Image (cartoon, rainbow, N blue to C red; front, side):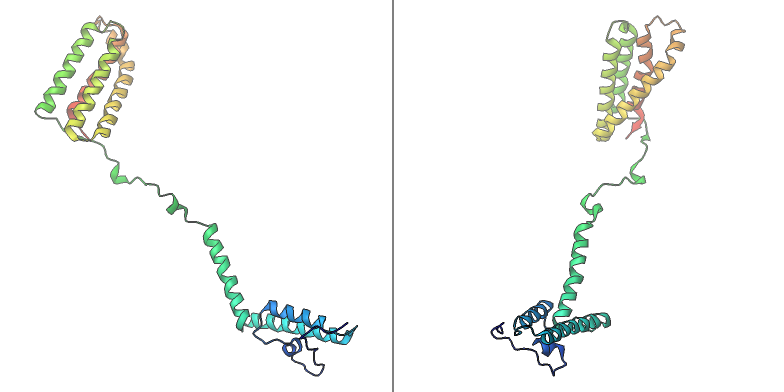
Length: 228
């Protein structure tokens, strides 16, 4: 087998593994492997001794690199490779573990933001308009409440009047809507509980108007005193 062009066979009297492979101590791992391949390809015939020297030199270089790594004495390409190995896991960790709270910024309610409304009696037109309007609705409920659909219509008008009164008084539309419907719900619940007692008073009203009276009164009270 002819010697590969440009390849010098290893010197059997030289004990330096780098010189045996024809490379410098700063050579990269790929260069070490390529030098081993070139040296083996450059052997003539079945030169078992030459092959053994090349394999021994290759193993000696790897062992020396491993020893230097363990002692922290990295040089040249080996030090650069170690830096790359340290950077890649850090980058992968940064990609694999994103900061979820930053990706999903959700508002957290604070105790100071959850406040009950202040109770204060309205003044001027803000008092007389809801008071007069709810008085007319109550009168309509007592006079024509027996007709089908009348209690529901009057309660809807009372809720609208309450929401508009609260919004006009405080300038907070969503708060006004919330407190208006809260008063309606509580009034209907109270009316369903008190309807039997009101019926016992012999007011001459059907159950539906009787159950609507507490809701209408509670809506009027909310429009007059709630300062949301």
